[in-house]
Image (cartoon, rainbow, N blue to C red):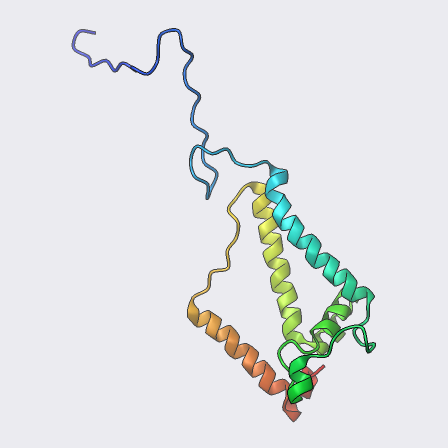
Length: 168
């Protein structure tokens, strides 16, 4: 070893055990921190899913078609205009009962939202199970404007005579 450079670890004494290897970072986590257990990763999405399931169970059990159970839409009461959410509770009730046709008739935009939410929850649960990063909804401003325009067109069409099929 006459011509080779030797590196000496000054922080280690000959009798001390080697320091533990650094913990590899999970995707989206800083290095050096251990990743949480699978149960801990699944807790937050499961909590959200339980809350939404409980809300759907309540709306499925308490019929919004019977007066007195839920408040009237303030936009409809004050202006007579059906807002994008009008019929949402009736739609959720029909959806929870398994009647997709009635749910679409009450509020088609809400039904589309139910399916988007379900897809997001499946993605979140799969990623949490596998230890991946939490999914984020990141849309460019033009897509948010497009969604707003879609909701506005939905409101306009459902309040006109030819769009009465979209009214609850």
